[in-house]
Length: 378
Image (cartoon, rainbow, N blue to C red; front, side, top):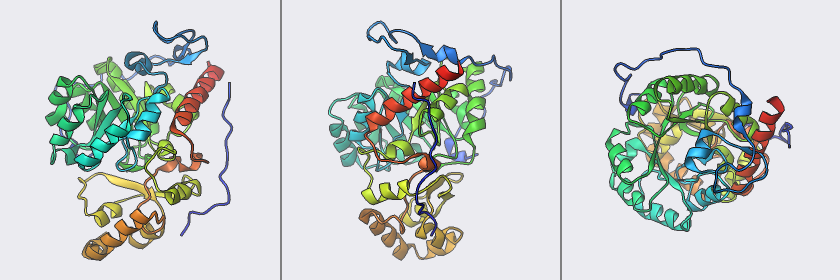
């Protein structure tokens, strides 16, 4: 059981294919030009107030996302199922980003509790789209709380676009490959998220370092008003700065905010993350098999390598045959906070995380670090 390590290597940061998504290539839409102008990081450095209604005498990190969505920092929190509740979403929004409540697999009472926990702070909400189709009233109920944005991931967004638009919420579509990006543009998403395989939880195989700029090129050529956010492996200002340099307008942060005080995560799972480096996760189907949640083909879950993954990864058929027993063991271990015999849901960014901190602190520091990186290289 690999995981434990005495300490993590630190790094210094400057102080100053899936068919479930639907669609396919939009007819008549293609890349017009593959070449794009060289990026100038000075475009991201804005001196003075970010807008006419906000006083600020210091240099701030300004992107299309911060300007059009009236945010102080170009950071959204991922709507992580079971972990991203109203307290976390509100803390991210108070910190200057936009927090998203995780809609999960369809518990209306839990969702109501989390909107109440946000205490009126502007937040958004995210849904697993293929699951939402089984309980579409969840979206209707969530929209009564006037979320700033609705994020749809892992499925065809078309059945829900009109309702989101009618409620005045922004539509975010999370994508795992270029087919998804093209489809999201086709449905008129306000923001597209390019999720790299480094991300914790569910995702696919495309690495972020090439996916993000390819998505940026396509959006610039075909839907220049659409925002692009990067996700997967972003845990500090270096990741945010890199995402902006690759053409994103901001980032969606999951694992780093999973490791926050406000996240609904067991303390022993937090401890497991602190002990884990970037090699300590694996993409696998076994957590979904144990939970008896039938995910569409093409998506797997990135979770911590532990006794559970060592026992069952590669033995999926046997796990399915024994799921009546093993499923109960999995769920009990999860409830107990056992870090070895259940899924512990974080991504490769674990190797960059050394402490559990308030979400607002994480958001503000990440933005400040990114600004310092960009000023250094400007």
